[in-house]
Length: 220
Length: 220
DNA sequence: GAATTTATTTTGACTACTCAAAATAGCGGG
DNA sequence: CCCGCTATTTTGAGTAGTCAAAATAAATTC
Ligand SMILES: [Mn+2]
Ligand SMILES: [Mn+2]
Ligand SMILES: [Mn+2]
Ligand SMILES: [Mn+2]
Image (cartoon, rainbow over all chains, first blue to last red; front, side):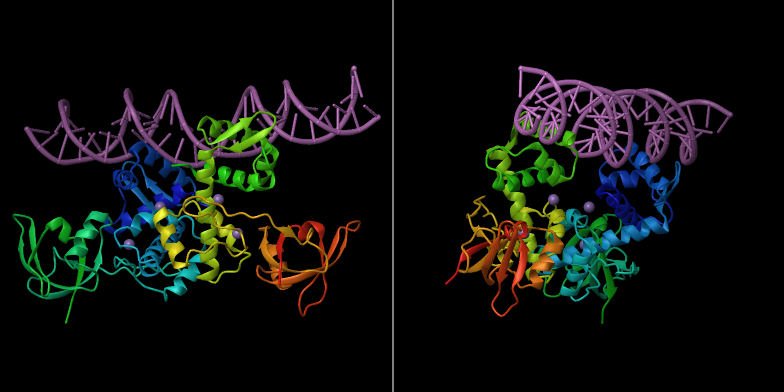
């Protein structure tokens, strides 16, 4: 069985691969895992020896099919656990990522299946993140964001790709939850500012970076 | 934070202390944790250096107050998780010990409190094992067993102190569950055999060792 | 009261992970 | 084409936990 460390390396590699097409740079992994770059080099070489990743020295890493399969299993556990924590235990969506970070390594497949059934086989977690299927299908669509969607058109929020508790608390405070409606009224590239209008709400200013973490689809 | 390894050492020490008054022999810990005796000696010395146990060389170990406090926390997690797995996820009571063995190290206090509330603050787990309170009170009473209770008198089963899946499946098959009624009709010390009578059931023969793992109280 | 058996401890070695700091490769600008 | 910056790799070292096997202490047995 893969260790907790290996599971974390693989899962973060999968997550980083979504934003980085091709090879994930060692530095990105190092930052995501909060270990020094030298450690990543060492570990990646050992993962490569086990056939879980391929390492192009000086360029980056990517998952093999076997590594991806394992990573998807961990990600599925993570997101189902988050969903459970919010829907059954009524925890706040800003707290569940940290909890799931631990639990994803302690849950057996048997428990996972029961959890999945209890929750009615959800397809997304509380942040709108897609939950990989039991067979390892990851239904990840390409969405616009509040930083890129057309101006003035009504959109529905589908996903918040930012785990930090502070951001999620701020988002909820202003009604920026998956499923909510909104409209981008102004976008000032020079100032790096996006103005968002919620139905029955005051106009809200967001940084371009923050806006880019909120995925949307056209509504109505 | 204590490592998974340390938590397991402390928890098993607490469990073994219930049966062994005074010092727990190194060999008992070694067997419980499935590591060689030399490893236990090494680890126990390091636990002692951290003030979690006291080690009387060549005699045994016991928990300090600090060690006991930590151990009770782990045990509380273990037993609440078992209860959750049976009552909410409908898992079989013979499977939950193995699951809880992992989960007890991954659950935060915040999650534990929610779980506890969801379950209605249970006082015992599916095996009848007492659940330590949040303050670390362990309500452990001394009970008779099917190996020691008076003959012919009706008793109610209160606890099965045996974790192995095979035993628990066997027990359930014959209706030997916490809360069930029974009567010991015969006890043959020479043969090491106990005969148990269940209401509306055939007489059942148990080894003295097995009978000793089923705790009972007088009923009616 | 030796001699033997059994439990425990010691010793030496190994795996998995990690960091600090020095070495190196591969740019991108001049 | 070379210089310097940045990302990556290498080297050396440390921690936590483990085992195998030899050494030792404490009971038991005779
Ligand atoms: Mn994790
Ligand atoms: Mn999520
Ligand atoms: Mn455990
Ligand atoms: Mn139990």
